[in-house]
Amino acid sequence: DVQLQAFGGGLVQTGGSLRLSCAVSGLTFDDYAIAWLRQAPGKEREVVSCISRSDNTRYYSDSVKGRFTISDDNAKNTVALQMNSLKPEDTAVHYCAAAAGFCTLSPLEYNHWGQGTQVTVSS
Image (cartoon, rainbow, N blue to C red):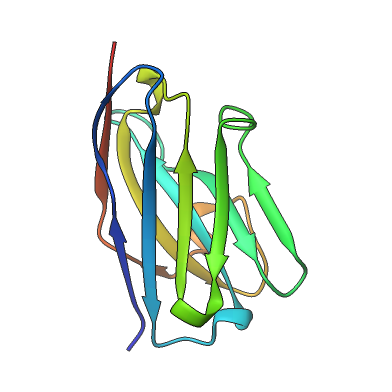
């Protein structure tokens, strides 16, 4: 079975940093796009970042460009999201998820999900 586990959430002050990690098992890494998504209370779930090894694509939402960096370690089957210069607007439950094929901006296309990890940025 496919499993994804997200780690690394926490509480930080504005301007701080966190590094999220996603451990992936049960799928061929190169056949899937792995994304980080987030959902704040009362907000729709949105794709924050995505990485696709097949076409060497990395995606970042406009709100996090220049602050977040997604990376992967195929040998360890992990995908990380380095989050710097955090803002209160980044406060949300963060999920890692997998979609067959390439990166997509639609959360509906991600069929395998990990448990959420809470990121809270205090002002």
